[in-house]
Image (cartoon, rainbow, N blue to C red):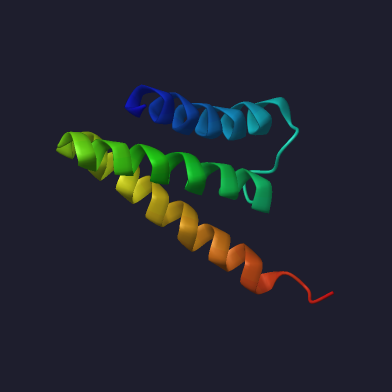
Length: 80
């Protein structure tokens, strides 16, 4: 089960990255940032459960930075 979660987390991050590289997603768009938050959070949780502290640091910071960016984008979006 842990392996499945790792693959899902990695696919989410890579989907955002590939989408941005292909020009389908803007690096500051909500879909891109949600993919990063979800993928990095999954990988951070798995790293924490496995006691992989270096990977936890990387994915934990990735999650926090992505969350802060997402909050900033959502704050500046015009109200419907």
